Image (cartoon, rainbow, N blue to C red):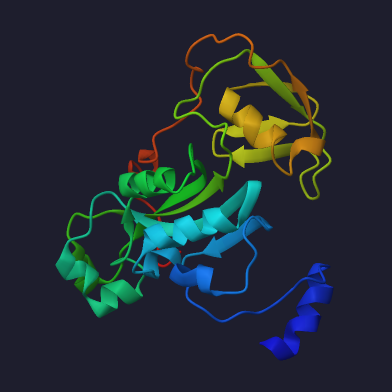
Length: 244
């Protein structure tokens, strides 16, 4: 991999490209500076970790204030029985290690990630009859989340009468900006937001791409219709097969 390091640095346009070998549960053992990362991206590997709490804590340690963990993974609608967790085939299909969604939210909060934002989610269909028989009634989804490292976030979406206007300046998103699955902001339109969404835009790398209206001086109660249940995606049963 390191023989192609220069190629990837040139392709992505960043000269600080490095390949490191290690375990995601032990990021503290690598030569990585705390609070030095703007964004950390992960694609369907956290479910394979045996210590997911350590993964999230180490990521939080590495992110800058205002930094983001953007990642896709497999989740379950209940806690996975030990027999399924220890089944090598089910584990290898990214199912045995899948977190119960509510447990994920608890671990995220414990690591300092308040108000995780779901970007997209789709049910995973189990097409193999042998796997389906073992799994029983457990339902799985492949879900992408944004987790922001922000000390100012509240545990609920609160209304302070704030709004933002997207300037259309982010590459490949000239017409609208998608923060999550229920915040799609058209370019040029004043868009009412809760205090958390305001902070996710104003205190992060997105700040220069928005105009901001209001402040935190006056509280109007809960923000109507902002946060959706992370289990909503389980209602629909049609979906793609595992893995992510």
